[in-house]
Length: 170
Ligand code: HEC
Image (cartoon, rainbow, N blue to C red; front, side):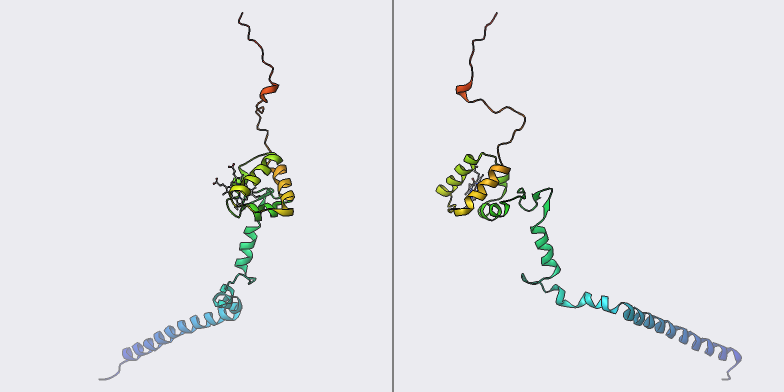
């Protein structure tokens, strides 16, 4: 079988094809190498596990985020509890959310005497402990921020102050 010019041409084309194919791989490899060299450090931090190792004491970004949410205050309201964020808040949060939701506090309104009465009732029947020297700041806070609200309707008159009169029909 003799090799004509056609065969030789076909052989060269095959070689060319092969070289082109290989150069594509070379280009791909070179690109990857370039990406690694340029961005290797920031990419490496993705797959290093140390950041995911969250323990309650670690200063990781996740626990920082959780702490931020715990302390979130918006328009003077402590977001997780709904309590007004003001002096005495910490005592109320730590004492008055131990057994029930802070909603029982935020949905109630009373005078100082009324709040004291509720505290005494919980102490007598619900296992609330003696608040000691925290009772005053807690009462100050409750009486100031959860006082009976003027909701635009006159409070009912005490019966003895009502001046009764005879309605004259005619
Ligand atoms: C030892 C547990 C405990 C603690 C601590 C506690 N409470 Fe209560 N409280 C209760 C229980 C139990 C009830 C009744 C809940 C119910 O009816 O579902 C209650 C009910 C209430 C109510 C509703 C009363 C009503 O008449 O409906 C208010 C308001 C309230 N608590 C405020 C407070 C405040 C303010 C504090 C912090 C000084 C506090 N609680 C701390 C146990 C507790």
